[in-house]
Image (cartoon, rainbow, N blue to C red; front, side):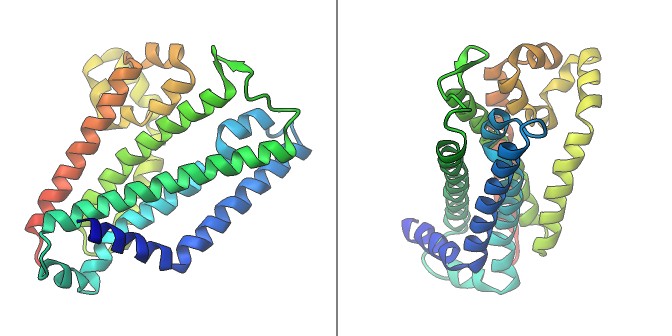
Length: 257
């Protein structure tokens, strides 16, 4: 399976879109850093750094598109047959794509964090103190912690995108549902919080798990609102990620090629 993973990573590295999107994200981070530098009242430098200069929304879109197309394109162009008819099983093919996308998502988060550190060093060295404390922990650790929460919830969404990519034959459908689902989830969050206060069992639904980064950034408030602890939210995300990936695996095994 290592050969399959290397092949998938090689294909990603050869895509023009990979490097165009990389340049786009870095330019966007620089743009927000300039805004924070010139207009601190509009964008707080510390808040901008803690959000890795707002790179997360772009990472979300890039990863949704990548996860949807890595499967649907194989079926659209018939290349899946070449993989299946060789010595690889369907399970190996799909798991190699999961691992490839996991590595790709780590690349995005590592890159956004490194760029944020570079921007802080050159533009905000005397403004953003990485060792200053926010909610009892340093700004540096706080940023890593919240970024880690965003990474986990990103994979909750991507596991659903993988599922949809195994159901639909068109990548556009999986991408659209993934992006629309993300925005729809944000729209119903307030209603969800109200319902949780009345019906405690509702807190275990996957939409609630999307609030994991919010709980990490404001633990006291969100623990009371959601009636969930940090540990419960983490393992709730892991459960739904595993569930959606397993359902997607089931459809992939049953799909005609």
